[in-house]
Image 1 (cartoon, rainbow, N blue to C red):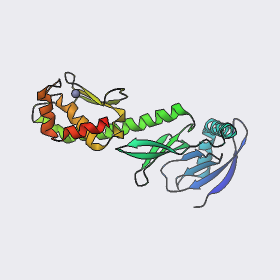
Image 2: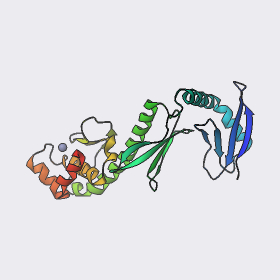
Image 3: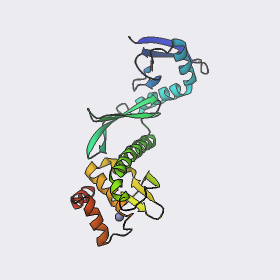
Image 4: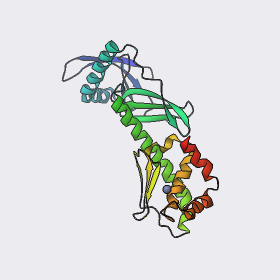
Length: 239
Ligand SMILES: [Zn+2]
C-alpha cells in the first residue's frame, strides 16, 4: 500500500502534526521521526486509522520532543552524522546506524553487516552508549550460554554441577571470572566483540576453574585437554 500523508491536531499542544501513514506487514506500530523532520508511522494491516491516530495522540510529547531536538541540532550542527560509527562484532565490524524511533530496539543485518539502533535521541552520546551496552550484554549472554551448554557435558562427567548463574556485566580488566564456591560464571559484556575462537577459550577457561580454582600447571592441563590450541586462542584476546 502506498504512503498517505495525513494531518492531525495534537490534543495537548493543539499543534497540527503532518505525518506519513504506511500500512504494511509489520507486527506493531512503529513511529519514527526522521533526520529531516518527517514523522512516519507504519501500522499493521489490521490497524485502523483511528487506532493509529490514538497512538500518535498518546505519543504527543515524544513526537514534539523529537522534532524540537531535530530542529535545534539542524541549526547547531547542520552536518551531524547519524551514520558512520562502527562496532567490533565477532572479530569483524558492524556499521552502526542510529534512528530516532519507538520502540527502542536494535536490528542486526548480518548480510550487510549493519546494526540499526532505534532510540529516543540518536544524538545523545550517553543514550548511544547505553543502547550499545544493552546490545552487547544480550549478544554475549546468548553466546556464552550456548557455549557453556556445549562444553558442560565434559565437566558434568567430572562431577561439576551446572553453573548456578551465568552473569554478563561490564568488566574493566577481565574477560571472565569464576566463583567456583558459589557456582557462578561471570563474563565481560564486550566478549561479543571478539572472534568466536576466543570466546570459546574464555568459556572453557572459566569452566576449568570449577576443577582447579588457581592457575597451576594442573589447571592449564585441564584447559589443554578441552582445547589443545588454547594458547593461540588466548593470543587473539591480547591482539
Ligand atoms: Zn583464570
